[in-house]
Length: 245
Image (cartoon, rainbow, N blue to C red; front, side, top):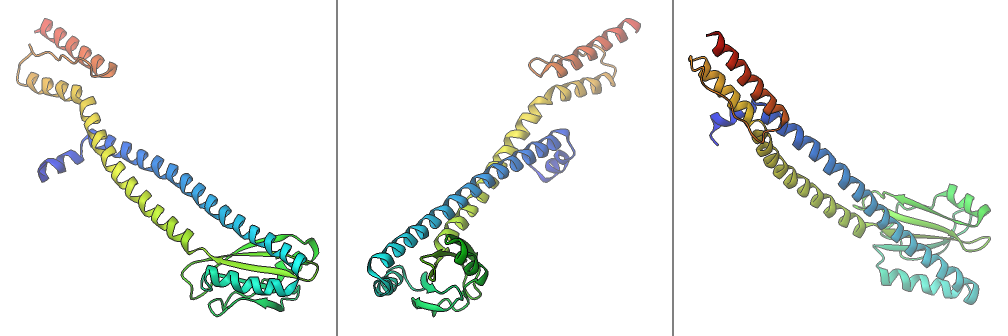
């Protein structure tokens, strides 16, 4: 398609219908994928939370069965196995004092939330918090869980894997939306031009009539009820003009 043809196409009804069709298709596709993305994000977060709760249950059982020394040893082993840059554990008092801690050199800005500590002291449950730590590219999911009347476990895990996966998913969704919208626009343009082909034939007939060719008639089949009615009305008008002439 030449530049001149493209410029002229921009002013046609078929082009405008194509824009509407492609726009509605793109918005619908984005909405559908956004819901899908939110579902995947929620599932990913729930999986992380379940893993943290499982760890809390294990440490609570270990504390009851073998005492603080066993918990201290297990915290060190667990942090090293998961990676001290990715995972940390601490045992805290309700006032925020540290009883036992893994290597926190990579978690300098992850101070305990005193509001959560105070609440857990009374209800003995657990609480989650997602924290953005300055200097770290990814957020951290933190679990606070009561392990007794005076002990609260603070456990944090980097969301790097989750966020990288969701980032790749966003890029994939964006690429799919662009590609599918392009093909939808091409198909929409073809359908719009085919649907309006009857109007083009009526226009050509009118141009021929302006050159005193009153015998011209329009024959539109399969163009839709509206186009067929337009053609029938146009032909009827020509018949009356012929009678007058």
